[in-house]
Image (cartoon, rainbow, N blue to C red; front, side, top):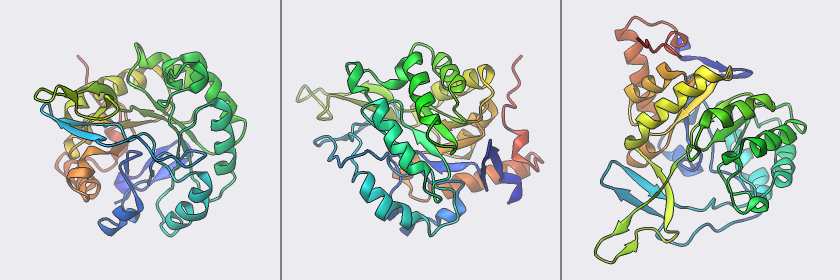
Length: 303
């Protein structure tokens, strides 16, 4: 399936499919062969162990999606280095840790350690997490702070850096440009949308943290728009993330400008969704006589 190969700068993938951080765990290898997907990204890692938010953490919505507020549950960096990395080292698929931290200094510390590990192929920076030194405002909601964060991490490693942009901003392009200027190699566009759902019978929020991240098919048009905008405004490769449930959804993001696609909610419905979506992309290419997936990337025709 060489026609499915994509390059995101120095990062080379056998196909454009990978899990969205937080939607893939070691147990998933019981259902799919991760050697068959483009890359693997486990749940965001934090420096210290975290238990996450109290339950209920997830609820479905009538509009076609789900709200989650897991709270970056993590076993911590030491466990990740001793257990998680060796586990994924058994596979040929590129391994991309996702990093979450409370401060720029902590981001730097974690990324410096991960950057020294051969099995780490790239690092995704979850800049949607709250900056405790800036009154809890997410790093990725302020272009100057995003620029500083990526710049500081860039000094610690030559591994490809992938800021994961937040959609909860006035202009995602402004944040994307700040990340590009500070040394980012790839951009993930985007993360979940801040949302809330109320049980009308109990009058209580459906998740304990009141608000959470909205994902699922309903957000796809929003993500297509953001991928298109970022593709037009920057020269960095883009990983599209949000709302992809099938092969045509993935193609839509790629036509907008994504070179690769992350799958999240679809895998909760069907653990084999990533393999199915990969196969559907290949079938689409055969129907349309496309031999190289590069022909699709950014191929939208705007009148």
